[in-house]
Image 1 (cartoon, helix red, strand yellow):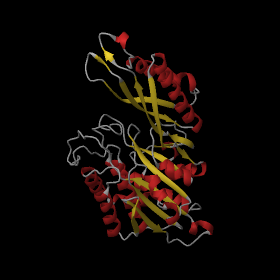
Image 2 (tube, one colour):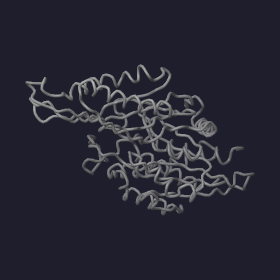
Image 3 (cartoon, helix red, strand yellow):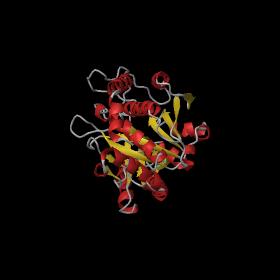
Image 4 (cartoon, helix red, strand yellow):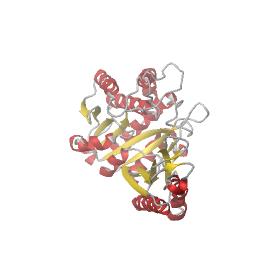
Length: 399
């Protein structure tokens, strides 16, 4: 791959790509409602002469690009998938720049507008420069933010309709310098489970607690004991998180609530730790309730599995990054992260690798899911170039 030629080719339409990204940011669409976003993707693919199929998992789109280089061994039959998520978040944006969200209560707070744009740029370049053998499937996925759109695409025959020997994804990372990439072999991102515990007692008058069973006592014990699960049950070299996000209780300052509901999330990277967290959380809830003659109902829902990168494909991704920005700019053994991503479902079905690209440092680059977050336009060309480099690394390994 001619690195300078790829960057120059993508740079030639950088302005158009930025316009696309800003348009998507102004019109965020959430879980399975990405009708306009999917339409923009289809419009651009059509304009650039790229064949695609739409309507997978509702709004999902898969574009297929076939290389023109003469076959070399098995490469002519090899196919890879490059996946970008399209959906936004249900949150209020506080940015005041020109491309801020125009949809109340919805925002591209995780950079999926940028991910979609980078893959569109790569699809255009690979179509105009099909100097590879084999096939590239560009997967534009809906509903990553809690809707398991990746799983739905699989359930609707993604890999049967578009066979892939490997699948890859790319996500921006605020706080990581521009031009830097990180990844790792094995577990990289965490599972994302949710749970709710409902403590029930009799409730009663705040001035006569001795006449009631007080649900606030087991709640207090539960909150404190929850963190002891991590500190005293999870091995020190494993990463795990138990966090509370919602507590619902009470109707008056002088009434002890008869019911308290507490909801949170569990994050870890190994199946054994996942089982441990669920088991101990249930035990702690029931024991805390029993000490105060209350009861506990525990609802535990397993969400996205951990993202586990395959060794060969991770080496391939690292080689592609190194060819683009140099080996010094990729950390191929970065620590696991407790965020989650439903690319995990695709990586359960096909070997592959998820990579994080630096979104930049500084106060202007907020963390994902913050109301003043924005994707950095300066990495659009670089991210698209990574996809191109990866396609060459996978499909032209001898070059």
